[in-house]
Image (tube, rainbow, N blue to C red; front, side):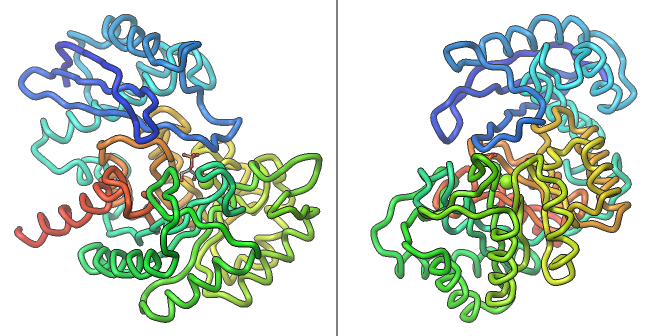
Length: 395
Ligand code: 2PG
Ligand code: MG
Protein backbone atom coordinates (compact mmCIF):
# COMPACT_ATOMS: atom_id res chain seq x y z
CA UNK A 1 0.00 0.00 0.00
CA UNK A 2 1.16 3.47 -0.82
CA UNK A 3 -0.44 6.74 0.25
CA UNK A 4 0.23 9.73 -1.99
CA UNK A 5 -1.59 12.43 -0.07
CA UNK A 6 -3.69 12.95 3.06
CA UNK A 7 -6.29 15.65 3.58
CA UNK A 8 -8.59 16.27 6.52
CA UNK A 9 -11.46 18.64 7.21
CA UNK A 10 -13.97 19.45 9.92
CA UNK A 11 -17.53 18.21 9.48
CA UNK A 12 -20.48 18.35 11.90
CA UNK A 13 -21.74 15.31 13.77
CA UNK A 14 -25.39 14.61 14.65
CA UNK A 15 -25.14 16.90 17.68
CA UNK A 16 -23.76 19.70 15.52
CA UNK A 17 -20.29 19.35 17.03
CA UNK A 18 -17.18 19.39 14.83
CA UNK A 19 -15.47 16.10 14.05
CA UNK A 20 -12.75 15.04 11.64
CA UNK A 21 -13.07 13.54 8.16
CA UNK A 22 -9.92 12.31 6.44
CA UNK A 23 -9.25 11.39 2.80
CA UNK A 24 -6.34 9.14 1.84
CA UNK A 25 -5.27 9.20 -1.79
CA UNK A 26 -3.54 5.97 -2.81
CA UNK A 27 -1.78 5.38 -6.12
CA UNK A 28 -5.08 5.01 -8.01
CA UNK A 29 -7.88 4.90 -5.45
CA UNK A 30 -8.94 7.07 -2.54
CA UNK A 31 -10.76 6.38 0.72
CA UNK A 32 -12.64 8.71 3.06
CA UNK A 33 -13.42 8.15 6.74
CA UNK A 34 -14.94 10.21 9.53
CA UNK A 35 -15.02 9.51 13.25
CA UNK A 36 -17.87 9.68 15.75
CA UNK A 37 -17.80 11.24 19.21
CA UNK A 38 -19.18 10.05 22.55
CA UNK A 39 -20.92 11.95 25.34
CA UNK A 40 -20.98 9.37 28.14
CA UNK A 41 -17.29 8.73 27.61
CA UNK A 42 -15.34 6.44 29.92
CA UNK A 43 -12.39 8.07 31.69
CA UNK A 44 -10.10 5.25 30.48
CA UNK A 45 -10.78 5.93 26.78
CA UNK A 46 -8.11 7.15 24.37
CA UNK A 47 -8.06 10.94 24.14
CA UNK A 48 -10.24 12.78 21.65
CA UNK A 49 -8.22 15.89 20.77
CA UNK A 50 -10.29 19.08 20.86
CA UNK A 51 -9.28 22.72 20.71
CA UNK A 52 -10.31 24.96 23.62
CA UNK A 53 -13.29 26.11 21.51
CA UNK A 54 -14.40 22.50 20.88
CA UNK A 55 -13.09 22.41 17.31
CA UNK A 56 -10.76 19.88 15.71
CA UNK A 57 -8.28 22.23 14.00
CA UNK A 58 -5.30 20.78 15.90
CA UNK A 59 -6.36 17.21 15.08
CA UNK A 60 -6.62 18.20 11.40
CA UNK A 61 -3.21 19.88 11.53
CA UNK A 62 -1.76 16.68 13.04
CA UNK A 63 -3.21 14.57 10.21
CA UNK A 64 -2.09 16.89 7.43
CA UNK A 65 1.27 17.64 9.10
CA UNK A 66 3.08 15.05 11.19
CA UNK A 67 0.99 12.04 10.13
CA UNK A 68 1.09 12.88 6.42
CA UNK A 69 4.88 13.37 6.56
CA UNK A 70 5.31 10.00 8.27
CA UNK A 71 3.03 8.01 5.95
CA UNK A 72 3.18 9.51 2.46
CA UNK A 73 5.34 7.98 -0.26
CA UNK A 74 6.27 5.00 1.90
CA UNK A 75 5.37 1.40 1.15
CA UNK A 76 3.26 -0.47 3.69
CA UNK A 77 2.46 -4.16 3.46
CA UNK A 78 -0.89 -3.82 5.26
CA UNK A 79 -3.17 -1.35 7.08
CA UNK A 80 -1.93 -2.99 10.28
CA UNK A 81 1.55 -1.70 9.52
CA UNK A 82 0.07 1.77 9.04
CA UNK A 83 -1.62 1.47 12.45
CA UNK A 84 1.70 0.44 14.01
CA UNK A 85 3.36 3.50 12.46
CA UNK A 86 0.59 5.74 13.84
CA UNK A 87 0.89 4.26 17.35
CA UNK A 88 4.68 4.67 17.32
CA UNK A 89 4.48 8.22 15.98
CA UNK A 90 2.04 9.26 18.72
CA UNK A 91 4.15 7.58 21.38
CA UNK A 92 1.65 7.90 24.26
CA UNK A 93 -0.44 5.24 26.02
CA UNK A 94 -3.76 6.97 25.26
CA UNK A 95 -3.02 8.70 21.93
CA UNK A 96 -3.08 12.05 23.65
CA UNK A 97 -0.33 13.66 21.60
CA UNK A 98 -1.81 13.38 18.11
CA UNK A 99 -5.38 12.59 19.24
CA UNK A 100 -7.30 9.32 18.93
CA UNK A 101 -9.77 11.08 16.61
CA UNK A 102 -6.97 12.16 14.25
CA UNK A 103 -5.35 8.71 14.33
CA UNK A 104 -8.58 6.72 13.92
CA UNK A 105 -9.69 8.76 10.90
CA UNK A 106 -6.48 7.70 9.15
CA UNK A 107 -6.70 4.11 10.41
CA UNK A 108 -10.27 3.60 9.15
CA UNK A 109 -9.48 5.23 5.81
CA UNK A 110 -6.41 2.95 5.47
CA UNK A 111 -8.53 -0.15 6.15
CA UNK A 112 -11.06 1.05 3.57
CA UNK A 113 -8.31 1.78 1.02
CA UNK A 114 -6.86 -1.71 1.54
CA UNK A 115 -10.28 -3.23 0.78
CA UNK A 116 -10.68 -1.10 -2.34
CA UNK A 117 -7.19 -1.97 -3.58
CA UNK A 118 -7.82 -5.69 -3.00
CA UNK A 119 -11.16 -5.39 -4.80
CA UNK A 120 -13.06 -6.89 -1.86
CA UNK A 121 -15.87 -5.46 0.29
CA UNK A 122 -14.75 -3.70 3.46
CA UNK A 123 -16.30 -6.35 5.77
CA UNK A 124 -14.40 -9.05 3.92
CA UNK A 125 -11.08 -7.18 4.24
CA UNK A 126 -11.78 -6.78 7.97
CA UNK A 127 -12.59 -10.45 8.51
CA UNK A 128 -9.51 -11.53 6.55
CA UNK A 129 -7.35 -9.33 8.79
CA UNK A 130 -8.94 -10.56 12.02
CA UNK A 131 -9.39 -14.22 11.08
CA UNK A 132 -13.07 -13.99 12.04
CA UNK A 133 -16.15 -15.59 10.48
CA UNK A 134 -18.44 -12.93 9.01
CA UNK A 135 -22.09 -13.06 10.09
CA UNK A 136 -25.06 -10.76 10.48
CA UNK A 137 -25.13 -9.19 13.96
CA UNK A 138 -28.38 -8.82 15.93
CA UNK A 139 -29.78 -5.30 15.66
CA UNK A 140 -29.68 -3.36 18.92
CA UNK A 141 -32.16 -0.56 18.19
CA UNK A 142 -32.16 2.18 20.84
CA UNK A 143 -35.89 2.87 20.93
CA UNK A 144 -35.96 5.05 24.08
CA UNK A 145 -33.10 7.41 24.90
CA UNK A 146 -32.37 8.54 28.46
CA UNK A 147 -29.42 9.43 30.67
CA UNK A 148 -27.07 12.08 29.31
CA UNK A 149 -28.51 11.50 25.82
CA UNK A 150 -31.89 12.93 26.88
CA UNK A 151 -31.34 15.12 29.95
CA UNK A 152 -32.12 12.15 32.21
CA UNK A 153 -35.79 12.08 31.22
CA UNK A 154 -35.30 8.31 31.65
CA UNK A 155 -32.77 7.08 34.22
CA UNK A 156 -30.96 4.50 32.12
CA UNK A 157 -29.24 5.80 29.01
CA UNK A 158 -30.58 3.32 26.44
CA UNK A 159 -33.69 1.14 26.23
CA UNK A 160 -33.00 -1.15 23.33
CA UNK A 161 -35.06 -3.56 21.27
CA UNK A 162 -32.85 -6.47 20.17
CA UNK A 163 -34.01 -8.02 16.90
CA UNK A 164 -32.72 -11.46 15.85
CA UNK A 165 -32.04 -12.76 12.35
CA UNK A 166 -30.68 -11.51 9.05
CA UNK A 167 -30.85 -7.72 8.81
CA UNK A 168 -33.06 -7.79 5.72
CA UNK A 169 -35.72 -9.56 7.82
CA UNK A 170 -34.92 -7.85 11.12
CA UNK A 171 -34.98 -4.23 9.95
CA UNK A 172 -38.64 -4.21 8.79
CA UNK A 173 -39.60 -5.71 12.17
CA UNK A 174 -37.56 -3.03 13.95
CA UNK A 175 -39.32 -0.33 11.91
CA UNK A 176 -42.79 -1.68 12.67
CA UNK A 177 -42.01 -1.98 16.38
CA UNK A 178 -40.42 1.50 16.48
CA UNK A 179 -43.50 3.05 14.83
CA UNK A 180 -45.88 1.21 17.14
CA UNK A 181 -43.98 2.41 20.21
CA UNK A 182 -44.06 5.95 18.78
CA UNK A 183 -47.87 5.79 18.43
CA UNK A 184 -48.17 4.67 22.05
CA UNK A 185 -45.85 7.33 23.41
CA UNK A 186 -47.52 10.15 21.48
CA UNK A 187 -45.81 13.50 21.13
CA UNK A 188 -42.48 13.11 22.92
CA UNK A 189 -39.08 14.60 22.10
CA UNK A 190 -36.29 12.64 20.40
CA UNK A 191 -32.99 11.93 22.18
CA UNK A 192 -29.43 12.21 20.87
CA UNK A 193 -29.47 8.75 19.27
CA UNK A 194 -32.69 9.03 17.27
CA UNK A 195 -34.95 7.25 19.74
CA UNK A 196 -37.94 8.57 21.68
CA UNK A 197 -37.22 10.42 24.91
CA UNK A 198 -40.35 10.10 27.07
CA UNK A 199 -40.57 10.60 30.83
CA UNK A 200 -41.88 8.00 33.27
CA UNK A 201 -42.33 8.25 37.00
CA UNK A 202 -41.51 4.62 37.83
CA UNK A 203 -38.48 2.51 36.92
CA UNK A 204 -40.71 -0.32 35.67
CA UNK A 205 -42.79 1.64 33.19
CA UNK A 206 -40.44 1.67 30.21
CA UNK A 207 -39.83 -2.06 30.72
CA UNK A 208 -43.58 -2.74 30.77
CA UNK A 209 -43.99 -0.89 27.46
CA UNK A 210 -41.13 -2.81 25.90
CA UNK A 211 -42.45 -6.09 27.31
CA UNK A 212 -45.75 -5.49 25.45
CA UNK A 213 -43.82 -4.68 22.27
CA UNK A 214 -41.71 -7.83 22.52
CA UNK A 215 -44.89 -9.92 22.91
CA UNK A 216 -46.19 -8.47 19.63
CA UNK A 217 -42.95 -8.87 17.67
CA UNK A 218 -41.54 -12.41 17.87
CA UNK A 219 -37.76 -12.63 17.67
CA UNK A 220 -37.26 -9.51 19.79
CA UNK A 221 -36.08 -8.95 23.35
CA UNK A 222 -34.95 -6.08 25.59
CA UNK A 223 -31.48 -4.70 26.32
CA UNK A 224 -30.40 -1.68 28.32
CA UNK A 225 -27.29 0.41 28.58
CA UNK A 226 -27.49 1.67 32.15
CA UNK A 227 -24.35 3.79 31.56
CA UNK A 228 -24.12 3.71 35.33
CA UNK A 229 -20.97 5.85 35.59
CA UNK A 230 -23.30 8.77 34.82
CA UNK A 231 -25.63 7.79 37.69
CA UNK A 232 -22.89 7.38 40.28
CA UNK A 233 -22.18 10.01 42.95
CA UNK A 234 -20.75 9.59 46.45
CA UNK A 235 -20.87 5.81 46.43
CA UNK A 236 -24.52 5.60 45.33
CA UNK A 237 -26.49 5.39 42.10
CA UNK A 238 -29.12 8.08 41.56
CA UNK A 239 -32.21 7.07 39.58
CA UNK A 240 -35.50 8.98 39.51
CA UNK A 241 -35.17 10.85 42.82
CA UNK A 242 -34.03 7.72 44.66
CA UNK A 243 -30.54 6.55 45.39
CA UNK A 244 -29.27 2.98 45.52
CA UNK A 245 -26.24 1.34 47.11
CA UNK A 246 -24.45 -1.03 44.67
CA UNK A 247 -26.11 -4.14 46.15
CA UNK A 248 -29.54 -2.45 45.98
CA UNK A 249 -28.97 -1.63 42.32
CA UNK A 250 -27.94 -5.26 41.72
CA UNK A 251 -31.32 -6.27 43.19
CA UNK A 252 -33.05 -3.90 40.72
CA UNK A 253 -31.29 -5.71 37.85
CA UNK A 254 -32.18 -9.13 39.26
CA UNK A 255 -35.86 -8.10 39.42
CA UNK A 256 -35.82 -6.74 35.87
CA UNK A 257 -34.25 -9.95 34.56
CA UNK A 258 -36.83 -12.08 36.38
CA UNK A 259 -39.82 -10.07 35.22
CA UNK A 260 -38.96 -9.01 31.68
CA UNK A 261 -37.51 -10.67 28.54
CA UNK A 262 -34.03 -9.22 28.98
CA UNK A 263 -31.25 -10.00 26.51
CA UNK A 264 -28.40 -7.87 27.86
CA UNK A 265 -27.39 -5.22 30.38
CA UNK A 266 -24.50 -2.87 29.56
CA UNK A 267 -22.48 -0.96 32.16
CA UNK A 268 -24.68 -1.87 35.15
CA UNK A 269 -22.17 -0.21 37.48
CA UNK A 270 -19.65 2.63 37.34
CA UNK A 271 -16.47 2.19 35.31
CA UNK A 272 -14.19 1.37 38.25
CA UNK A 273 -16.65 -0.78 40.25
CA UNK A 274 -15.12 -3.99 38.88
CA UNK A 275 -16.02 -6.19 41.85
CA UNK A 276 -19.71 -5.22 41.57
CA UNK A 277 -19.61 -6.33 37.92
CA UNK A 278 -18.08 -9.67 38.95
CA UNK A 279 -20.76 -10.27 41.60
CA UNK A 280 -23.62 -9.44 39.20
CA UNK A 281 -22.18 -11.62 36.43
CA UNK A 282 -21.87 -14.52 38.90
CA UNK A 283 -25.49 -14.09 39.95
CA UNK A 284 -27.35 -13.45 36.64
CA UNK A 285 -24.73 -14.01 33.94
CA UNK A 286 -26.33 -17.32 32.95
CA UNK A 287 -29.66 -15.63 32.15
CA UNK A 288 -28.50 -12.40 30.57
CA UNK A 289 -25.49 -10.96 28.80
CA UNK A 290 -23.55 -8.46 30.90
CA UNK A 291 -21.70 -6.06 28.59
CA UNK A 292 -18.71 -3.89 29.50
CA UNK A 293 -18.36 -0.49 27.85
CA UNK A 294 -16.89 2.26 30.09
CA UNK A 295 -15.48 -0.65 32.11
CA UNK A 296 -13.38 -2.07 29.27
CA UNK A 297 -13.18 0.82 26.72
CA UNK A 298 -12.12 -1.52 23.86
CA UNK A 299 -8.73 -1.66 25.54
CA UNK A 300 -7.00 -5.05 25.31
CA UNK A 301 -5.35 -4.60 28.74
CA UNK A 302 -8.65 -3.81 30.48
CA UNK A 303 -10.39 -6.66 28.61
CA UNK A 304 -7.70 -9.06 29.81
CA UNK A 305 -8.40 -8.07 33.42
CA UNK A 306 -12.16 -8.39 32.86
CA UNK A 307 -11.63 -11.92 31.54
CA UNK A 308 -9.38 -12.90 34.46
CA UNK A 309 -11.81 -11.55 37.06
CA UNK A 310 -14.98 -12.68 35.20
CA UNK A 311 -16.30 -9.13 35.47
CA UNK A 312 -18.69 -9.44 32.50
CA UNK A 313 -19.46 -11.92 29.73
CA UNK A 314 -19.52 -9.63 26.67
CA UNK A 315 -17.63 -6.57 25.48
CA UNK A 316 -18.82 -3.46 23.66
CA UNK A 317 -16.43 -2.59 20.85
CA UNK A 318 -16.03 1.08 19.87
CA UNK A 319 -12.99 1.74 17.67
CA UNK A 320 -12.70 5.36 18.82
CA UNK A 321 -12.25 4.31 22.46
CA UNK A 322 -8.86 2.84 21.53
CA UNK A 323 -7.92 4.76 18.38
CA UNK A 324 -6.91 2.24 15.70
CA UNK A 325 -8.75 -0.48 13.78
CA UNK A 326 -5.97 -2.99 14.58
CA UNK A 327 -6.33 -2.54 18.34
CA UNK A 328 -10.15 -2.75 18.08
CA UNK A 329 -9.73 -6.04 16.17
CA UNK A 330 -7.33 -7.28 18.84
CA UNK A 331 -10.04 -6.47 21.43
CA UNK A 332 -12.54 -8.53 19.40
CA UNK A 333 -10.13 -11.48 19.07
CA UNK A 334 -9.45 -11.56 22.81
CA UNK A 335 -13.14 -11.34 23.65
CA UNK A 336 -14.09 -14.13 21.25
CA UNK A 337 -11.18 -16.28 22.47
CA UNK A 338 -12.64 -16.05 25.99
CA UNK A 339 -15.89 -17.43 24.59
CA UNK A 340 -17.60 -14.07 25.09
CA UNK A 341 -19.78 -12.05 22.72
CA UNK A 342 -18.93 -8.71 21.14
CA UNK A 343 -21.42 -5.92 20.49
CA UNK A 344 -20.02 -3.35 18.05
CA UNK A 345 -21.18 0.19 18.67
CA UNK A 346 -21.53 3.63 17.15
CA UNK A 347 -21.20 6.74 19.38
CA UNK A 348 -23.91 9.15 20.39
CA UNK A 349 -22.44 11.83 18.10
CA UNK A 350 -22.39 10.17 14.67
CA UNK A 351 -21.60 10.87 11.01
CA UNK A 352 -22.65 9.25 7.75
CA UNK A 353 -19.69 6.85 7.89
CA UNK A 354 -21.01 3.27 8.06
CA UNK A 355 -17.67 1.64 8.94
CA UNK A 356 -19.07 0.10 12.14
CA UNK A 357 -21.61 -1.94 10.11
CA UNK A 358 -18.86 -3.56 8.00
CA UNK A 359 -16.80 -4.05 11.14
CA UNK A 360 -19.67 -5.79 13.00
CA UNK A 361 -20.46 -8.00 10.01
CA UNK A 362 -16.81 -8.79 9.32
CA UNK A 363 -16.06 -9.93 12.87
CA UNK A 364 -19.35 -11.83 13.17
CA UNK A 365 -20.38 -9.78 16.21
CA UNK A 366 -23.25 -10.88 18.43
CA UNK A 367 -24.86 -7.47 17.92
CA UNK A 368 -24.56 -3.96 16.50
CA UNK A 369 -25.65 -0.95 18.50
CA UNK A 370 -26.40 1.90 16.10
CA UNK A 371 -29.13 3.94 17.78
CA UNK A 372 -32.81 4.53 17.04
CA UNK A 373 -34.52 4.74 13.67
CA UNK A 374 -35.42 8.43 13.92
CA UNK A 375 -32.07 9.70 12.66
CA UNK A 376 -30.62 9.12 9.21
CA UNK A 377 -27.03 8.53 10.43
CA UNK A 378 -28.25 5.61 12.61
CA UNK A 379 -30.46 4.07 9.97
CA UNK A 380 -27.59 4.13 7.47
CA UNK A 381 -25.59 1.68 9.59
CA UNK A 382 -28.50 -0.79 9.64
CA UNK A 383 -29.11 -0.24 5.92
CA UNK A 384 -25.47 -0.94 5.15
CA UNK A 385 -25.98 -4.40 6.68
CA UNK A 386 -28.96 -4.98 4.39
CA UNK A 387 -26.79 -3.90 1.45
CA UNK A 388 -24.09 -6.40 2.48
CA UNK A 389 -26.68 -9.18 2.52
CA UNK A 390 -27.98 -8.12 -0.89
CA UNK A 391 -24.46 -8.09 -2.37
CA UNK A 392 -23.96 -11.64 -1.10
CA UNK A 393 -27.27 -12.84 -2.58
CA UNK A 394 -26.32 -11.52 -6.01
CA UNK A 395 -23.16 -13.63 -6.05
C1 2PG B 1 -22.62 4.17 24.91
C2 2PG B 1 -22.56 5.16 23.77
C3 2PG B 1 -23.21 4.76 22.48
P1 2PG B 1 -21.68 7.57 24.02
O1 2PG B 1 -22.55 4.56 26.07
O2 2PG B 1 -22.65 2.97 24.69
O3 2PG B 1 -24.56 4.45 22.57
O4 2PG B 1 -22.85 6.47 24.16
O5 2PG B 1 -21.23 7.55 22.61
O6 2PG B 1 -22.31 8.88 24.45
O7 2PG B 1 -20.59 7.13 24.96
MG1 MG C 1 -22.47 2.38 26.83
